[in-house]
Amino acid sequence: MSGPAIRVGVDLVPLSRVRTMAGTDGGRLLHRMLTPAEAELSRSGAGWDIHGVAGRLAAKEAVFKLFHVTGQPLPWQSIEVLKSPGEWPCVRLSGPARRWAADAGIEAVDISISHEEQFAVAVAAGATARPPLEEEFHAQQDLVQR
Image (cartoon, rainbow, N blue to C red; front, side, top):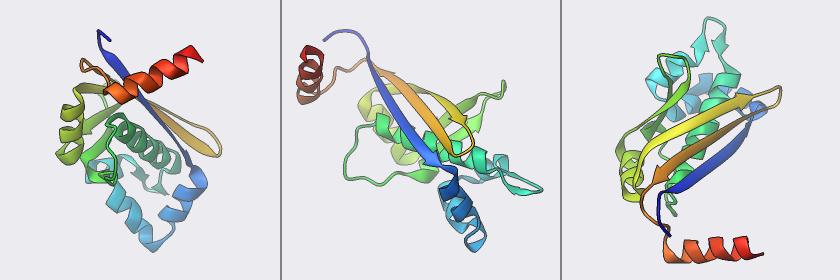
């Protein structure tokens, strides 16, 4: 296999789950899942922006899926979903997330977030010059041949 491999992650978060987290212990769990910069972007005078929080959580999960790590918890504070100067969502990696991205050969991550009345969804994509592991390659080939 030659050329870059594209990795894609997707996640869906019910807004009802975020409402519950926001209403429990003053949103303490949300403060553990969001960095201070993310929390600032996700709050207003009226409280938590439930749609914005759900979108950020979905994006963090989607980005985590790009790394193909097993047996590791999602490093909530190491994947930041912020706003670019043009107001588009962007990702900043640190700590374990940055290390796993480097191990996977992923140099940049793009995300897209959407939300509606009941759910937020996020898609993350990253390109890597490294070919997939041999077992991943064979599993992909089996799917293509079906």
